[in-house]
Amino acid sequence: IAYSNQLAAIDWIYNFSNGRDFNVDEYVPPVIPYAYQYLFEWLGTQKYQRLPLDKNIPLLYTLYEADPDHPERLQAWLDRQKGIGTVLKEQRFGGIVVQERQRIFKK
Image (tube, rainbow, N blue to C red; front, side):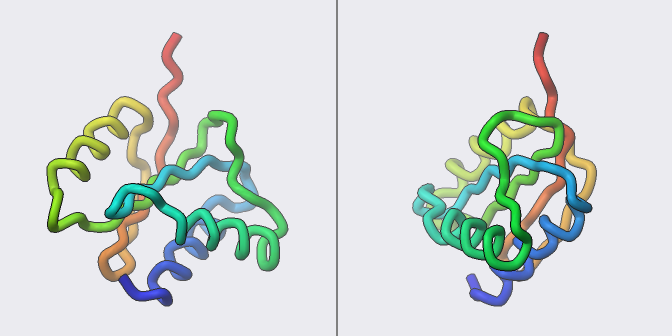
């Protein structure tokens, strides 16, 4: 995964959020998304002056990378996401997929 694609994916999220608060959920092999956590902290603080929220709100972005060694893990994560939010938009950046979702709040 190219660093330039990681930056482009995060820029896309900030640009399409149009100043609205949002959550983000990432899937990357080997499952722990340290690089994206760092990039959101760095770009969110330095460039956009805001960070993704921890509390669940309606606007959710999912970001994932292909997992050729364990496609079943990625599929399980994607299946879980179907119950969390409805996809509104999708954009690809090399091997990265970003989806804008409307969170489903269960009553």
